[in-house]
Length: 264
Ligand SMILES: O=P(O)(O)OC[C@@H](O)[C@@H](O)c1c[nH]c2ccccc12
Figure 1 (tube, rainbow, N blue to C red):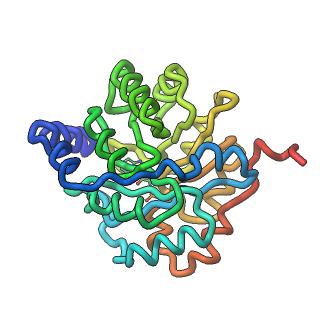
Figure 2: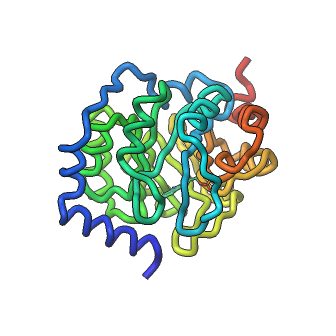
């Protein structure tokens, strides 16, 4: 059993225990209708858009420094992040829906809720506490499940980041007409990353779709090595949490998008 299978089993257990309904009852509703959509930000920007992640730990990384959440949010906002991502899984990532709610109320940026979504009730809760974007991982869903969760999230006014790991999953994301697709450079079975993975997977891209490279991006050289793939953005966690100089590092990653080379 892989870590991913284990996490999905755990999510089923939480759903059986009505974890999500209980949180929904306990937490106040947050209204974010006034926030600009992530996709429209991306479309109006010729530079790479960074989704900056608030990350505490993961099954593979345990040495992330403790950061004051409010300070980290301000740094992300002031230095050019286009959205903020947060993990809501308590057991494997030290996240929570309470933290998601604090984030959505503190920031004016759109917030991406990172859970391992297999059921509508998880989308209801993300929406309730003010997420603007939810993650759907192709690898853990059938195409029918993916399509139905995707349509459900869109019908609630959410944006959906559809995460793929290989070309077959990318084809599925294209088939359901996903507008926002993330290529995860982390092999979810072994949890190792290789940023070049983005170049390999994005050999066939569809016009009009927004592509993001996710995971394992640590340096400007990493971003330079994948910018020609046609990506519009990058999702970065660990290296932003660890960096001592975000005011320099974060803006430096916002390279001109390759697709915009001929736009004057
Ligand atoms: O910390 P990194 O290597 O920069 O990665 C961030 C993000 O891509 C990663 O947290 C992530 C991408 N997809 C996921 C799905 C579940 C959990 C975590 C993730």
